[in-house]
Each structure stands twice: as C-alpha cells, then as structure tokens.
Length: 571
Picture 1 (cartoon, helix red, strand yellow):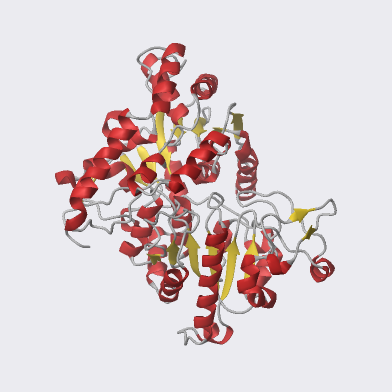
Picture 2 (tube, rainbow, N blue to C red; picture 1 turned 90 degrees about the vertical axis):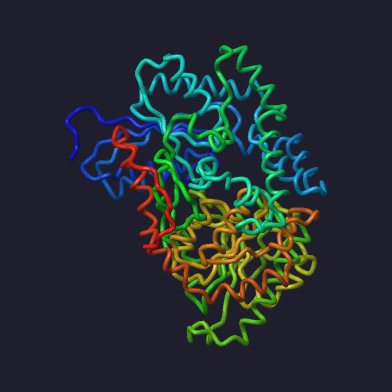
C-alpha cells in the first residue's frame, strides 16, 4: 500500500554499456510500476544510455499512467566503450591476440581499470556530488563501475553525505562470481576452472595443479601488478586522503565479506553451477530482463520474415565481437553445412521438416547491399534510432565492411567480392539466410517471438539469461574471460552446448571464434533439445527478476534471510 509521506528515493549508478546497464533499466521499470507504490527513481550514468532511460520510462508510463519520470543525471567523463577504443588500449588488445601463452592472454584481458588517474577522479567527484545532492534512501551500483564503488565507500567512511544511505550491488553477474570465496575445502581453486581457460567442470585431476597455479597467479597479478591501478590510487590519494582506496570488481569477487554489502544477482541457483554454500548477502533475484517492444511493432519487416518458412537459428555475438575474414569464412561455412544437413533431416516437428531452417545472423559493421530491386520494393533504408539494438535497417546484407558509402545513401560494390556472399549467396537470395548489421527490434523481443529454434551468442550474462527466459536452446562461442563460464553453464544445465571448445585455447586471432565443422555438428545436436523449455518455466518469465530486485530496493531494511547450504539432498 502506498505511503502518504514523501516517496522513497532510489539512485541507480551504472556504466552506460548494455552488458551492465540492462539490469538497471529493468529495475527502473519495475520500481516505477510497483502497484500502489510511489518511488522516485534517479538514474546516473554516461550520456550514451540516456535514450534507453527515456524509453524505459515510456514503457512504464504505458503500463502505469501515474508513474513518475526517471530523473537522469549525466556523469561527465569518458565511458567504458570510449576508453576501450583509445589507440593505446586498442593496440594492447591487438597484441593480446599475438600472445601464444593462454595464461598471459587471459590475465591481460582482466584489465578492469581502463581510465587514467585524472579521468577516474573526475568521475569519482561527480558521483560524490550526485549522491550528496540527490540524498537517496538507497543506492544500487554496478559492480564493474569502479569510480562509483570507490565514491560510495568514501562517502560512507567519511560521513560526508548530508544523510545516511545504504548501497547495494545490482549485478548482471552470477551467484558464482561472488560466492567462490565461500565454497568449502578451497573448492574455488581446484574444482572450478580458472576464468579464461577451457577446462571442463569439475576440473579433471590431471589439470588441478595447473588450475590452482593459474588462479593464484591471476589473483597476485590483479592485486599487486596492475600498474594502472597503482597510478590511479596515487592520484586518488592526492585528491582525497590515504584511507580512500580504489575498489574494483575483483575486490568484490575476492573479498565480498569485507565489503559488508548485499549483492542482488540476476540468476537463480537452478540456473547456476552447483554450489555448496551461498551467503545470505548474495540474493538471487532471477533474470532481470528489461521490457521491449514486440518485433511486430519495432520491425514489421523482420517479423514477417520470421513468420515465413521454418524456424530460425539466431546468431548474435553482440556489439563488441567483430568478425575478421577468417571468422566470417568459418561462420558462413558452418551455416552452409547446417542448412545442407537440415534439408535431409527428419524433425520431430513436421512444420520444420517441411519448411526447413532459416538463419538470422548479425555481423556488426557489415555493409547493407542495396540494389535496384530492393529500392523498388522497400524504398530507402533508414529507421530511426531506438533502444538497445537501436538503429539501422534489418534487411539483407551481402556486402563488405569496407563498402563505399555515397551521399545518396546507397553502397556500391561488387557482390562477387563479398566473402560471405561467395559461400551463402544462393541462400541469401532465396531468403533462407538473412544477414544484418543492426536490429531495430530488441534481442529480447526476437528471442521471445516464438520463431527461433536455437540462439548462438558469445556468452554474455544478459544474452544467456534472455535466452534462458525464452526457453530456447543456446550455443555459446566464448571469446574471453567469464564467457567461458556461461559455455560450461549451458552444458551443465543441459540447455545447450559450447560451440568452439576446440578453438578456445587457440593462439590464433580471437576473431576466428569457431571451427566450421565443430560448430555445425554442435548446432545440429542442440536444436533437437527440450530441456531449455523446462528451465524457462523455472525462471517464471522475463519480468520476475526485475520485480524481485525492485521490491528488495524498496524494502532494503528488511531481513537478510539465511545462508543457502547445499546438503546434497534433492527435492
């Protein structure tokens, strides 16, 4: 029942990248639409996410006309994507791929502090000012947003905030990410594979010594050998005092008990690695999926294509995974193998048997092919900016990344020069394969359309959870770090497969994400499974996790609950 007093004020602090921000957008919507509640939501982040915040409010307004606006606070400074794209960082990432020692590649990819000292401190002071001015009852913070974590601990320690407030971690990360230090008998060292390595779970006896060494060495590197962290700490100390310590995701993961803070995580024990102990500070909310327009509303053309013919294999490796020529060739060959096998396969579903399979493949930066016929039928390609997967058309693409763009909006290049088209040309022409560089519709909406038979993705937390909620089998091609964990997770749960295990420890370029034969065999096996639908029922739908998180943020003064201990008994 709503209160007659002033509304509860909730401040959300996050990076602007969707991998981290999506759970905050989902929680914002849920907070605004809680029945009989009046919550004032403040959202602080970098400018690239502002349009998505506005769109989230519009969704809430449609579902609850009296919903308050979301008050957006723009954080000055460089966002994570911009920091990653700086020449020195891009050069470092390019050199990573040339390093043949897998351990070195893994550790160098663990760099969490991409900002320089002055940039970090600028954001730090901006957040201190925002918290001071907003006077929130509760702050929810992104665990990967180091300046925000550091600022909140600084305010709590120094009592510099004009009012007392609590902060809580709101994370797309998993229970395992924060529960490892609490597992009995040092299982974190010998049972669970080191992040960034392709070992199976549990770690085989032969690999246990090397696994222990890798994890121990990684912790030492993260704690003592991060030159940029030392530089930021020195600059921060000059601007504040010696007691103000830089706080990172590694600190949360390795020492969650010392942080004395609660963690709201976006999954359930039933969609997690087997864990013996879950501390009461780690609160599983379930998948937090932000609302989105149905495909029919966001992109009618794509919706019509999805409904035509048989079921669709959906390949979306996210915005940050780019295909080089080797990667494009292997993926195109895999698609060709899959379609060739599908033509002669007797499916359980007679509709699929008679109409075959289709493939929807997103290739970031891919140039859309525009020819005379497509202009006559579809008119000019455009599409306004939207949320999430945002702007650009979703028509066929058969060009190259370096196709020339002219002032009339068309791209002119020879189709025969396209590597992908040389392999999949007939399938693209027939409409069996649809290649896009961007989506008008949200990935969540595409997954929930009911027209997919399998999803292939890179193993990000949001991609995994969105696919679980949709009840679709998934194949994961992990390119780095914790993505490996999600590849293992789908195999443990029986809802999918690791699609590039043979390539994962390869010393070749990380852009060659798969071997065509390996991935084709995995996909053929996966699209027949039923376990994914069972786990979708366990999750309870895309709205459950965000509503749980919203209620906890509203009722943060309530009981923490009890530790979860696995005694080995089955329900």
